[in-house]
Image 1 (cartoon, rainbow, N blue to C red):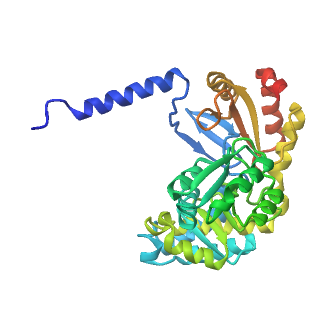
Image 2 (cartoon, rainbow, N blue to C red; image 1 turned 45 degrees about the horizontal axis):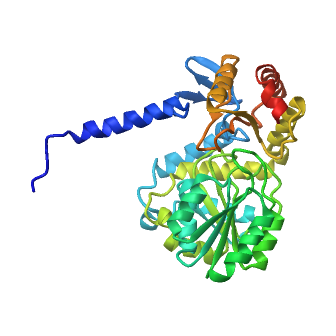
Length: 387
């Protein structure tokens, strides 16, 4: 039977997209990109207006540090703009090799492996280590990429309630015996709530049940006290280090295995040498200037103290609003006063928990922090009382 060639597939595709967009718009969940120029000292320019940004994960302001920029510029001149192909095809660039050695040393591990992004790292790690017949247990508030990598692995994946060690213990007791291998996924600092995982308890359970633990340290590297290290320490180069890319630090055997089996490394182009050189210089600065690295948490605690919020345990402070429309309205009101604090809405957070995610940087000064606190106290007193 001959196919019906009269309909235009593009029309049905556009109709589908338009209907989906209308639904997102009605629920205040449509996302749109806004052209924004970032500058030093937490500056941002959007729509011709200068703003103070509290929406950036550049926790130490190193993306604009002249030393980091100079390192990237030198690598750009020496090695070119791109890696050219997969690292297994073109070979390691010298900045990448040096960065991996420094990351491993910083984390107290034998080796490290750099990926194109943190998301790509977590897409590659779990499927390279576990599969059908295995078990993954993941914190309910884990990042999307942790869940994506778990799904790709084919292992049985179960959630445990956020930071609920008792439920994790119960799941291990019930399920570990039937699984060949078990992997626990959590974060050192949770990206939307700013709280920390109870790692000593999790690592103790993992040891008791022969489970491997991966800690996503994307938002903790350099700005919170690390405490105990997990066997698998994953993170990004795009936040505290002000560059771009992701990494895993682990034993030499694990890193060698992932070099052969992590598809998101094997089958994608390597990180540009300039990005690796920038991250390497930033990591050197983090290690050499601990007082600078401590500043974001100090400012976050200044903010929570002024507003009567629970004391910050990381540079991330959520201001819970509730509904998406209200969060967008509060964000717009703050922007009108010169602050960029983006609203976080479902599905990034659970329905009814839309919020402003306030991120503090060493690039902020105390006056900027106090001014934001004053504006929020005036614009959102109900949200602050609810906290």
